[in-house]
Length: 121
Image (cartoon, rainbow, N blue to C red):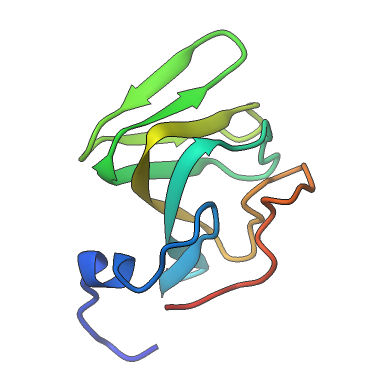
């Protein structure tokens, strides 16, 4: 990847599909992704890595077995590896996710919402 300025808002304008992460940059072996979410996702976990959510716009909730964490625009939260969770947003939300290269969005679960391949924008 060439050294370039990446405008997150402009990248978000390039797609509208939900629950389909788009890679915007790579940092060492980590991918920086944008994803638009709305309504429910699937319960899942990532055994080998933490998962970071940064809310670019909107509001979202991450549900755990015993609690819920609500995130507003500008909030960041790290889900610890091996933790069952289900993100969702009632009204829709844009999120930046940072995770190791090759991590599947649905973790240990296969579903209709599992991203099919690495997609760069």
